[in-house]
Image (tube, rainbow over all chains, first blue to last red; front, side, top):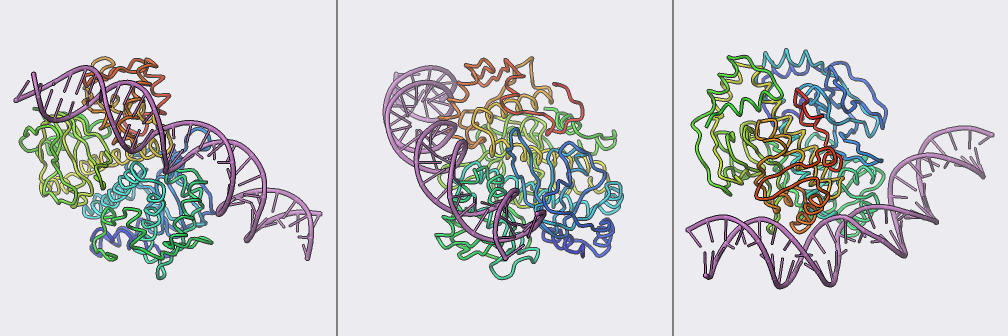
Length: 241
Length: 241
DNA sequence: CGGTTGTTTGACGCAGTTCAAGCGGAGTGG
DNA sequence: CCACTCCGCTTGAACTGCGTCAAACAACCG
């Protein structure tokens, strides 16, 4: 599995010289396959390496009492799943796969070495973490202020948009292997309501979502309902409106 | 006004040599006073400098249609109000003062210079931004999963704890100049409900909150209701439980 | 002392929750 | 190849936390 997808993603919001690119790629260890529904990084642990997702789907989440959990973000191919452990040392949340995935490690001490030699590479990785932070702010706003339909619409727009940016869209369809329960846990609504809301969007003929494939039928309307402005993703070239 | 409070805050989760400390302090320009309720950084702008808050209270927020807004975080003395503009260039949210404040600028090109010379300083500032990101994740979880009482309790715990960490607490009291409307906008609830929830906490004899002063009467219970575990703040020395 | 901004209270309505049951597909074992 | 099970999706009905509207009250300030 080629690790260039990580580079591709990184370059969505930063520039690197050839030397820096190679230095970065040299950090990525041999990939391995991980089965679905497997917790890869545990809250409160302090790993010696960070993970990058080369293929598949994963999510960060926090567990609460009972069976409640909040999904904090969905990881798609190219995402660095936890720079957190590199910078913050102790995890304040967990990371698990949603589907079978291919991941690779980046050892912390090697990251530090390379970062000290290439300040600009540091800057680009830092930028990547700041973009993620921007996504948290957007989710906070969506969940704090918008009703369920808008939250779902926003989530679908974001996932489609990000997947497209790393070349995982075919036309107006993407593979989106989330259960309704995942969607509910990400948006702070109940599974039942997630279901009803999805039906609403289907009946409005804005989307199709079956057998893990999302098709956007009316991007403009969907983006409007979800109050989705892609600016917060901080991509350099603004395709799509 | 002395700018050492910023250093103090930074050192809550990182270590710096004397040389690095001085380099950092040299970045901070002459402080100036800003009146209350003043937008200092506008969404979509691209400032040439970042701001640090030396005294007073400020908040980051995103505006939506109507008069709705989501407050993303409260800035207290010592906080770097927007490293965002340094790394991401274009702001995806605004920053405004809540009370009269003292702020100082840090010019972006000077930050870059100093950061290239001191990789460890870069690391510590990066860490600071990651802690902020951790707070966003915590808010996301709180707002997504917990009922209003818990949200309010959590917010009060966090503010008290952070203020105490920079030396702004006297006993179990802190000055907390937030209106109920600020609290509501931060937690995704209505002003009316914020009011009723605060009354509930007062009647339970967990807090006092009047004339901009918060007093914690029963920390343990409050933390329990708010599901507050300070670990997510990533402070190095764990006072308080 | 009037105006403005923040807090408090009451009544009513609704978006979303919870409980509970039924349904369909995919995998497994006899 | 059928029965059984598990998991995810769907549906209905009853309930409730919180929002909205509206008005009164309190505090601060010029």
